[in-house]
Image 1 (cartoon, rainbow, N blue to C red):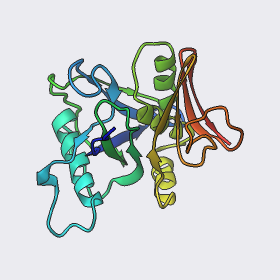
Image 2 (image 1 turned 180 degrees about the vertical axis):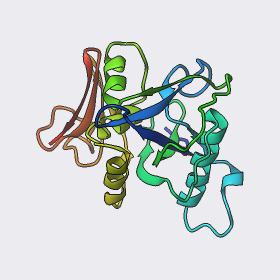
Image 3 (image 1 turned 30 degrees about the vertical axis):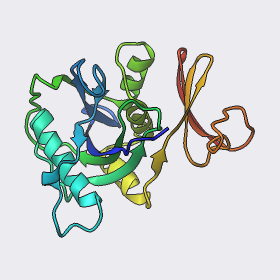
Length: 224
């Protein structure tokens, strides 16, 4: 089977401090039911366009930064400086994905200004703490893609925005999540490099774990 090349894309996770407690809130956008990631709650983002690429770029990251900033403006009306956002992770979906986007994830403090969604691709927005979003997904109230879930899970322990940005900047090189997918009786498992079952897509092999269990009873990240 010929696997199509993944489409370059970028997204930016916009965060702000909680008003009355330690922790952060994340800006989530609700996509229309049509198109890629239809009906899901997502971070601002989309594909890297030709206009995002400059001849003087060293590699693909500068274009991804511009794409993330452009999408933030287009989807929620917020102006983000592409040079100040922090690279968080990279994601490549499994070959079985119906539409494959190789996505750069960035993290940024929310800029000043009001969130304005276009009412087309994006129909609503919410500011919520990562834990509240994960709980809503497990109750079936919202739908999240695995990279979104994993990103929110990684932000659970951030004390504030400064802490979240410092932690993201300290992880170099960033993790490149090249996903392997395996179905199980109660759902599916996504595995990444470092998991004992990664090379064979065998969820039962003994050894280290680096995986997300996506079961009907709930989702759970396992790393050991």
